[in-house]
Length: 565
Figure 1 (cartoon, rainbow, N blue to C red):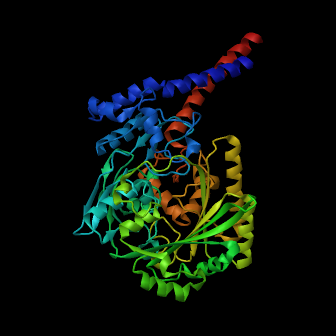
Figure 2 (spheres, rainbow, N blue to C red):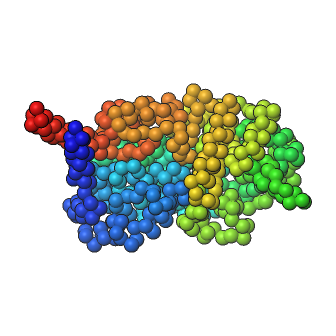
Figure 3 (cartoon, rainbow, N blue to C red):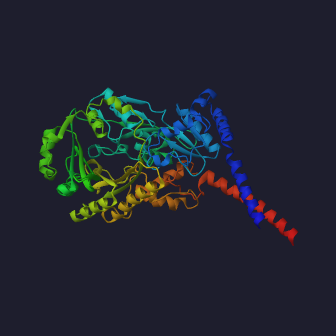
């Protein structure tokens, strides 16, 4: 029997190598396929990279924002494709299908869990960073922006055309447009204008058949799905047509820090009752962070610091009148308020110094130095003062994990949950982002920091949404469930899917089942199909391969048994 098992093992290895081949043979086959898609050889050499190409690793690492996934042991693509034309994307989709490999799509943003550039099966990475053109139309207040552009590039291009137009999206300029908008997207104008996805007018994408579709061609169901349901489950987003918003020539910014042991708890309690109900022009983010401080005798202690960070779409006089009436516990003074243009507020929220020019928003490199983990929650009922104090004590005992409270209300409360796949609308007071960063790449450091953030997340269970415990898609968190794309794909997908999308998950599955029935566009947290297809091409091929090897093994075993007996 040992010989049978050995033969079985060898056959599986042979079958696997036959399916995927060596890296060079896979690359050669892929290039050959691209030439059949009317892509000239001279263009292919500029957009396709095998692991043997000296540019492969620099391209791969260029947009890895989480150092947890930038090690020698991290899985890497067999090929990187960096399209410069829409036709290149179509060819890459069709040829990845022909190669029977998984396709991962990266638009150059943050990707907390590395889903766009790692996998446990052989894959091709489609990196969209070259497709980042932006065309702003001031007369009708719209813009076309390609998926590989960053928010910083979008804001800069809007500013060069108008000082009274903006766009409601994230505060970090190195976030990629493709993932941000297709996951919902929000920023510090959320309460005034809603989500980024609420302002998407049209889109262009490549579907599973390699077709380039706009809104009319893809249909309203698919268009609905990619405005908050995650574009990578349905196709490759090429570009979005967005509606810009009018911003005043003068906005006001403030950043106020208070320590909890200096009566800041009163301000945190009051913030919960004000931030989601105040004037829609005001967005006040609250950061709670454990800060290590040294006393005079050089002893280290941990204190919780509350930072109130605000954007007000108006002047400081109106803001002061509002705060003094509704939020006196903050103790805001006129000296805390800084009037500026909208584009300067973008820079200030991105932590640039106040002399920085808008051209700095074109810097795509970001800060790649951190190891990090993020998680998310939603809160519907204010957390009582005594419970807040217990949370502060828990944060002190852990030592590193911070919380970011982002207020809702305003425009967000006016939309029904099914307007887009993003369901976290009316009834939400604020969203929580759990955040921990560290600089040591060792296993022990990663284990300690992951334990800390998961511990605080567990501790917060009584104070957040339930049945389901909601989560934000763009704060990807593999802790809440993953999909191995096998025969239980739908059941596995529903675990994380209902957290991200609530009742909208069922409609997303229906759309997916129509536009991508064989589940080609898949990842660890993609939308599954209704069809129990055993995980699509790659899994099916494994199954056929296993069956063939098993038949051969059984035949060999029968022959051996006849000889023995």
